[in-house]
Image (cartoon, rainbow, N blue to C red):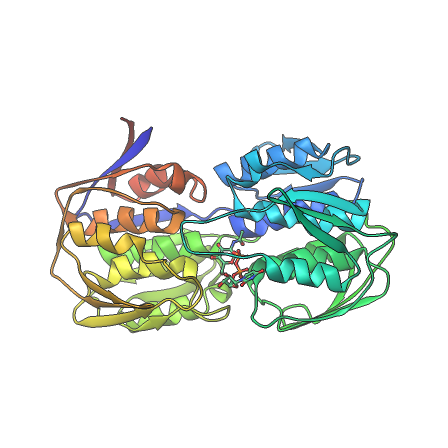
Length: 420
Ligand code: UD1
């Protein structure tokens, strides 16, 4: 199993390329199930989760092929030969549930394993299922599987989400694109990844209005067709490296990053004393002076993303003063705290809030994390630590960050991967 060794204390200078967004790529790949024609996605990152989704689509019968000179294009197409998403694949990645809407809309049936427990708290899929039922699907649970059927096509419906859900919005958007009649999604999630999915669906022939708002109107069509779509840059990878600069100091351009997707993250970073500006190549991040404690609360987009909470905390741990970090999206998403504490951080968790009291420096330690963003927060903490930090179980990291050790080393950090 691979581990990553970090020796902290060096400022970062240079350029880090930002890849295509994992959380945009996964639903876009599921959208490949909506047509027999070819969907060509470009700027697809090389990540374990993309491989998992590729295996899932392949076993549904889709021909999945990496193409292009840079190997970053993915061609999807062909008939669906199997409508079952087996537990063995779904258990590796929750986003597998995104095949449910497309399979049901195109084939009239789907049998998809329930994603099951997740390290960051109970994450139900009730909103996905209720929405599909409102569109006429019959849904049963059978031996850990969601079994969904519809006679003929799904039907347009008005679906009001009690809270914005990224996955449920995506599943229902895809299903509604091929439904009969008009679907209204109210209180829909507005993340940039959803806007990206809408743009791709429109390129495939879908009729969607209200893109970028919480109220999406989808007029179903009978068929979707071939399209080519470039995936947006990853705003969480961007924010993670911005925190790396905040922690280590220096001046780095995050190439291809988009300032407009950072929303509350950019504001919180500025409040913490980081200079973050839009430049023609992407986003430039600098820290000349000290860091200050800033309070943040995770919220649906455009609020502060839960996927940036652990990394921001790693930065607050070495800021001057205190900060309160509140997690309002997922319960139990503070697993990085105990590991950060082992490196000398002063953090107290009370319910869904963590009080961080900044310290002058951390000290290196062997640490490990049980989820993706928690793992990246430990790498960041390692940049602030005196001595050597070893982060083990980096397969979590590989689900969502491409070549983290290469990207950080290229800007001057001492970070290397090794096999234990
Ligand atoms: C997506 C992201 C994940 C991110 C999360 C929140 C992908 C592949 N994953 O996950 O990285 O952390 O958005 O920004 O894009 N909920 C229900 N019932 C449901 C669905 C969700 O109660 O049927 C709740 C969840 O428990 C959570 C909240 O709604 O409290 C938001 O979850 P959701 O937006 O659905 O997250 P995911 O789509 O799973």
